[in-house]
Image (cartoon, rainbow, N blue to C red; front, side, top):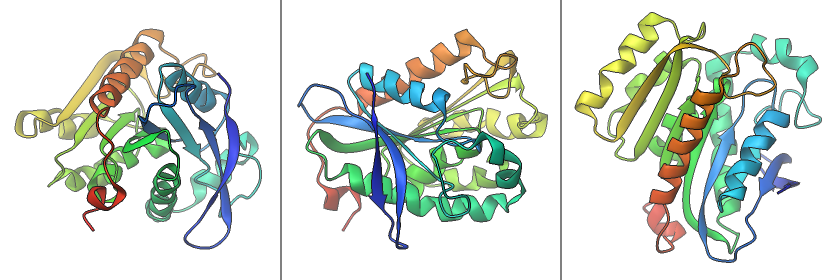
Length: 243
């Protein structure tokens, strides 16, 4: 199943690209929005989106770097430039793009108004920020970075959140893992999985050194289970945002 690159109108003015894949069935289904790593919506991200669509869900992967580095969705040559920009500030700005992507999905007849935010690497914090204040019904983080800066954002979140790392992830040192390990004991909606010997970037088939087949399969299975839980009656846009 192959998707299309569409344009989404930004609340800030202008438009940004988004890779969108929709299932063939016309029954309204949940969606998953992929917040990518710094290298953008590359072949790995598109393959993940295609896989979700093959399981019957809508999948979208917006370009979160369109303001600073205009151009194609995937820009491997610009990784260094993206990393050098203020990370927390850029993630904050990207919240608007994640919200605008969700709003666009709300115009699709196939969407049941319930979506999960799935962050990979750089995009990891959106697994928390999405349910916290952007209207998402769940969040999944796979080898997320900068996560210690967002641990307090979990307070008050009642939606399902799944956070997954390997214990050899150089972007999630032991103090980060230890800070998150105890959260499920006090927040039953949050699950944290830490796999031994797994490195940063385990989801990415294009990363020959880091890719871990078993951990990727586990992550996809958990994400699919969360999406299955989001099936059901169509929830109105106004109810979802509490307006």
